[in-house]
Picture (cartoon, rainbow, N blue to C red):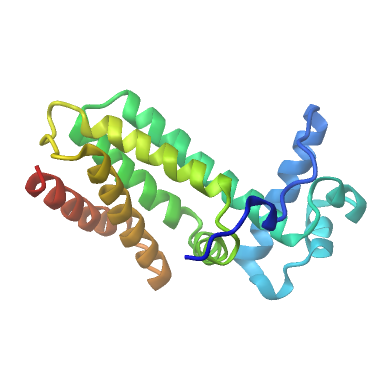
Length: 204
């Protein structure tokens, strides 16, 4: 993959400091999500987002310089929700339960709003690989690393590599299922679980 700098992806112009500003930004981002999942990229413009959010185009540009910054903010919002869920799961479960919970969260994250998730996956690959994306990957890896240290899971020769492999298995299978338009969460979760546990039980 070609290296890029973080400045290449347009980012929000400023962070909202007041409650009303935060509500405006949240409304703009959700309006962007609804347009993307209902109508696709073909009609995705800053004017359309502003109209759907009920704000002026000037208000939108106070926070987002363009539509790619909106997509970036959406990616951050959605992945941040996944991280919060995985952190809560990792804090309150044994190893096997935590692995199952992380898999279920990843499946739900992909299939909760499948059209939006598929589009964001494509855009994340197209847009520069910036610090936000690396931060999410590092945090998920850290969560999995802490889970793999639990005593009820087989000890791995190299836990760091094992956590990276497990993350790749989950992401690869879940993203591929999203691209195919799968909707059965239980079936997908079961397949991912078999793959992950097959790896963990045989890589010690």
